[in-house]
Length: 265
Ligand code: NAD
Image (cartoon, rainbow, N blue to C red; front, side, top):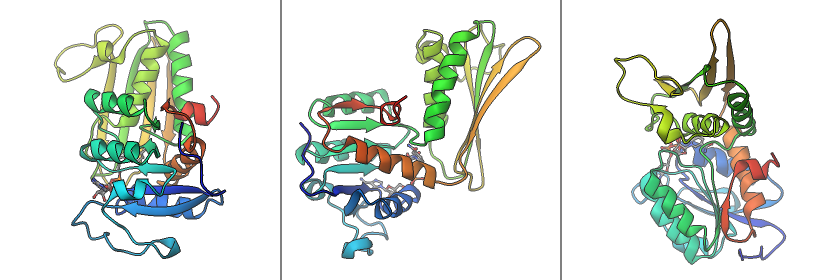
């Protein structure tokens, strides 16, 4: 079982405190009356280490020590930090929301192993709108025949490291599920100098400026097309979703959970 909340407030630890999302999540935790910020972690050497947090706390570097004082961690860091964050959460019997993207199959296997001991929710996008969009894409792909092509386009700020974005892959996965196939078997990658093969799902990634994240799923038939688009106007939507997920996850039994479960889809 997960650690029961020791007071009426759920104690939250934020991992990646000095990052774009870390700052938005710390603000969202402070604004949520169900939650109390128990601490926040940055990698050693980062300028944010030691800086002040709400409640008289300061940013530290030790996630294992913090885990013992938390009911749930929210991790928006980098793929290389995942293994250590999973270990800390397991040792401290602390639930974990993983928002980091660019995860490999080995990372997902590590999450599955940790989920035998603690509650873990991994979501490449924690926004309500994207969770709903994924459900719509799955339904559309199931209803439209294989003669409709599916392409996914995304735009993100110039500093984003992974492409296609985790959200684009999440949407591709939803489309593949709707068609009853595995994304890995139909994902069009690399080899661009040829026509699309029937049933392939293509991806296009644009980078620049400060865009928080736009995603369009194009369903392309002969003589007509449908465009399903989500535009993130600020990172606050991801932070609110992650904080809502943390409040939902704290105290749950070990297992792997999804945003669709949090939102009751
Ligand atoms: P960022 O680079 O601004 O912030 C990441 C922070 O994590 C950095 O400050 C970095 O120093 C820190 N970090 C790295 N290793 C660490 C460790 N071991 N311990 C503690 N801190 C560590 O990036 P960002 O824009 O905030 O995004 C972070 C991640 O979240 C990316 O993978 C991004 O794609 C993803 N993201 C997910 C969603 C979602 O809804 N799930 C939304 C936006 C971004």
